[in-house]
Length: 165
Image 1 (cartoon, rainbow, N blue to C red):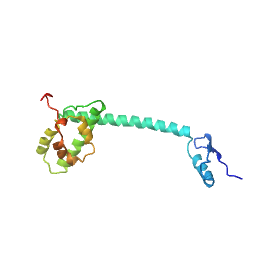
Image 2: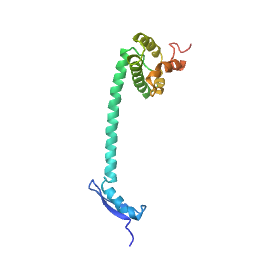
Image 3: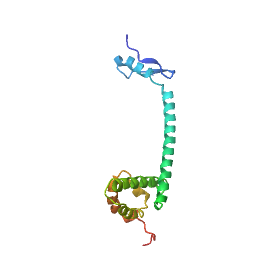
Image 4: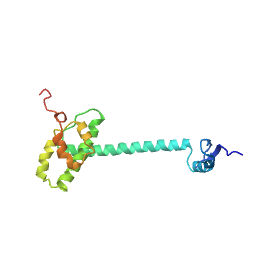
């Protein structure tokens, strides 16, 4: 007698499905059917994943909103100019700038050897970097490397007041 290939699975969620296990070796079908029974059926699993994605999306939106508020408050407090760019890059660039500059301050001044006066001078060199894309590109940089990165920035990253010169 051949080992059956069509199994009736009563899932953890209470639903019963028919599973064709013919693609599995005969000696592993029973254990796989047991494993399936300990899980939700496909419909319940997909429903759960959709809810998780929605809650994850809401959580991420709230987190980004809070980060954006902190970045905007910081930019205003330290007189950082608005960034230039398109669409979502503006907000993302502002968050990246805030995170990198505050981390650099901690690394270079609080934990490092740069004085507050030196930092103020350095901070002045940050203000002309208004291209959002530049800050996004530096988001994974080591905060201690910020002075070197600022020095390496091109004139495209520092627009002039008069674009015709």
